[in-house]
Amino acid sequence: MLGVLALSLPIVGMLIDMPWAQVPEILTSETAMQALGVSLRTVAISTLICVLLGVPLAVFMSRLNGKGGELLRIGVTIPMVLPPVVAGLALLSTFGKRKLLGEQLSLLGIDIAFSATAVVMAQVFVAMPFLVTSLEASLRSNRTSHAQISATLGASPSYTLFHVTLPMMMPALVSGTALAAARCLGEFGATLTFAGSLEGRTRTIPLAIYLQREVDPDTALALALVLLVLAVIVVSLTARGRVVSRPS
Image (cartoon, rainbow, N blue to C red; front, side, top):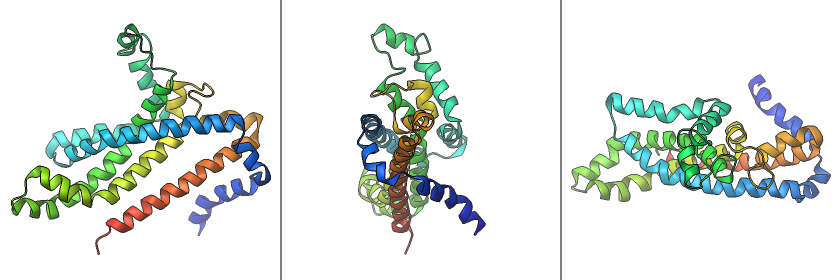
């Protein structure tokens, strides 16, 4: 019971403190709409990139064994445990002006740091491991059952992948994608360090909450409510994925 209270009481406190009568007006204000627009645009692009890059990586990792596979899994997992500010510094040290790749890109007229592209890169960097690890674990557990049976019946590896393995992994793919999207939506430290907080360009909802909490706490609470609602939706999707993937 104490554990439940420790997890739920802060949320209850926030809901009690919420200026419910002003929420519609606050969420339709220019500040909120700009932050919401930046978040929704970047999260949609980041989540799509996570899926396009993460699914092939998860399939590749699921087929690796030995030290090479372990090293790759460690490398993929590191962004999950890095402090967000360190992740932002790593991106800035690589793609910032006069840095490892940023200097070469600047010569081509491409400046990534402190732009909307930087927001997307920060979100992908911290969120894609959530999709890869969850999907890879599901693929590895399935590899020794249905996929092997398909192979013993004469199906080619590509046929097995597209007609047996991936359809069975849809619940894991849905929950992994939802987790990645939630991580993108809540990303703060790496975004602030690598992309800054330019209103209408790089200021996402978490950054707006951080800035508004001192000057306008009601707006900060209303924006937090948006993230809370989206978090509930994500948890529902991931819970549904676990139920669907549970063996009968």
